[in-house]
Image (tube, rainbow, N blue to C red; front, side, top):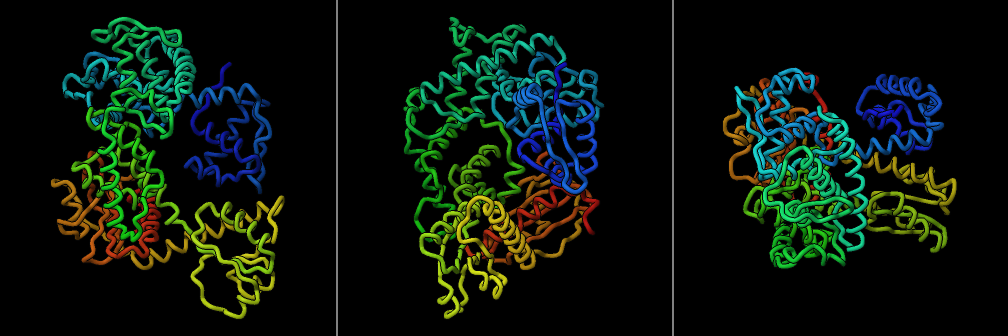
Length: 598
């Protein structure tokens, strides 16, 4: 009998497969975001249900290790991974409800939804609230909610198909009531379309993102499914055969529209994208890019006129597609914002302010976070670059080899790398500006505890301990930067009365003690946390956490805490400041209000 894997089971098995060795219960619990006891229960159940097909060895000291996994279980895992592909960070139950409503023409009452999906009415109301927010992120479709009649989707058949392509992963579709034979047929057709379309795009050297490729494939498979279920497009026109299936001209026009707005990888061979794209003036995107870089340089006080973004051609291509999405109102629907914002608060704030200036409007959050990811990658070297001093009596050839290894194992850019022989180091004894101090000489490591001792030649069995040593140094360096920044900038937490917000961000500005006029970005984070950030020269640099006695509503979210970060310095220290902000966002986004020490 076919074995279907749940998310926790899948995460445990994938982690054990990739580690190739022992994994502690604490590590697995951290990966899954659950307790160690839950991990123990899941592994025990896997062992009981799968028997000889999946043998997991356990040790009280070492943890768990995957000894064997049968070939047919590996194939089942891959199949389940493909079925549940979800690049949109959307909850499965909400996606299933949204997809169900997209296949209904009339109102569906809350009682019907509750009965169909075995949910309480309060849960249904909460899910409808979330769906309404999701539907509002992209033009062409909306969710109408009536207190007496229930809820229904409004929009044209083509827009419904576009939106179905967002949610219609096989793993979501199979949760819907209906003919299971149709869901199985959809999965088979989707697989064939993937192979055929992938081959066609490869032959034409069209390099769209895998995310948009999946959506385009689902759109075509949804067209076949909806046609069979009695939903048809107006003015369909003649049919064309592709990959063994017949599609109308109207359906193919929608498919070409999806491709024209897809995120693409820059490179040669994009002439197949269509004349509509080629006719757009590249100068518009170039002007946007120049303005974006100018705004970022100004706020970061970057003296160099070198490009801010590392891959300008790729970003220009993205901006061209962004222009088309803004013109049509069909924005990107994937939603990475929470995790990306927690990891990159500086880039999130900068992009929100700079795009507001460049585009003269508020961009949808998903589009903002695409651009934030570009900026984050470009600033990575400046944020993590390290100055290294190597004290060694080895030959220039060996020290050059060490330099290459160190750059690889550090996992971040090396801004400067200085090598000195022992005699010169001992003669000068000057305080350098290097952060990472390395040596191949035992006497230096004994006399100066801040130096890390490395072998002169790193190969074979020396690689793992050296890599671990540098990783530990990197982790300690990060902790120390966070500690210093919090010690310098964090202010005592405060308890505020809270209450219902009536003026949007103005109420939260006032709580933080910020006057109108400063450039502020506002973003919601998981766990009822609101993140406010600003650059303001006139006041003091600070980080403050506010607890609200009574929750306040913002952007349909219940806010219980505010994290207010105000940067008032120049360029020096800005990356360490926002590293500390990222740490606090991570900590407080996972806490309940009652657990905070007030």
